[in-house]
Amino acid sequence: MSLAVILIQPLRAQEDREKPPDFEKFNAMRIAFITERVELTSAEAEKFWPVYNDYQKMKKEIRDKRQANHKYFMDNAAAISDKEAEDLLAQYMELQKQENDLDIEYNGKFREVLSAKKVFKLYMAEMHFKSYLLHQIRGQERRGQQPLP
Image 1: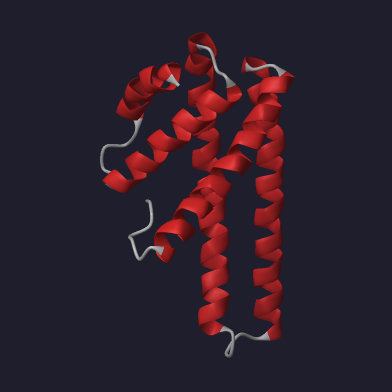
Image 2: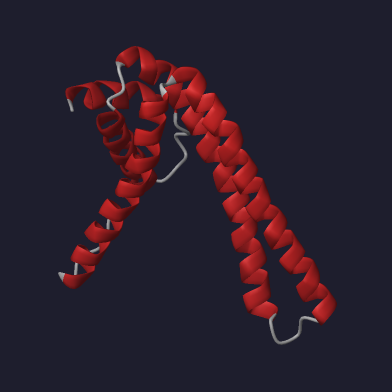
């Protein structure tokens, strides 16, 4: 875990300072969690995190477009024509394809800096981190506390 703590400070300095503090806290948790679970060395982390951050940024752009598509449909469902629904559905599926293509592209990029075993550990760490966050949020909601960022 000490490696994760050492790596967090320089990586946090790279983050956009205009993001809310909660995002920084979440990002630091994610970095520490993934670093520990993947067992990144400092040399690997130096090469890996810029690639991973680019991947996350591009993935977020696709998810944001998909969510905007979904919100538009939900806000206007009663008034949308069948043709417009067809167009929205085509856009939605194209965004799904873009996300899948991005995953495939970045799998190759991750393999340029990490072993296959560590890339697989990355995917498992991401899944476990999501589960961890959901567990934390549910626990806090049950206790009447404010959820994590």
